[in-house]
Image (spheres, rainbow, N blue to C red):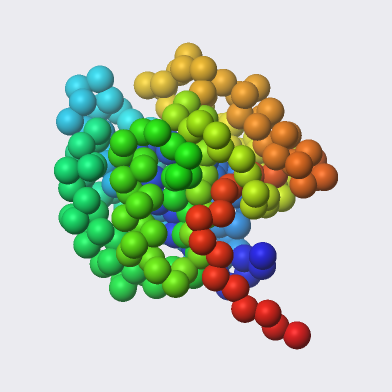
Length: 210
């Protein structure tokens, strides 16, 4: 798939999701195409997570994402299933305003209720548009990347650096730099490349051009 000229929308449930799933890819394409990163909840209702909104902004800055391309939604963590219609309408407005050509969202193999709910509603809201699912290792079971995108050593390092901005989650196993790197090495091996970011295919809309 050629990403050139595509308007790419990255959707995550919570701060850190997009970076964990797509950080290297974002760094790879951010200077080449128009992107928008939307996180539906800022986790500010949890007193233990008051810093993650700011950490997300710092993390995205490491990846090269301008602050005006980072959006926080109004939804409350852990109760997304109760807001399905509101999430659908939020996504329909995003579709109208941003008009994306390609969308990244949580894998359908993800068991977190917020992740799965927003993916279901994204597939409804963005009918007729390619949607790929990213892996958040702590909550995905049975994930296998059938869509592999080459990234560079620099992209890998920037993803690790971006995740290190989350002081709140320092020490969590899924923020371990060796784990982060090893996942991209494995995905690279599947594509016979040094490094790759891996996604599952939720919907591909294509056109053959001779």
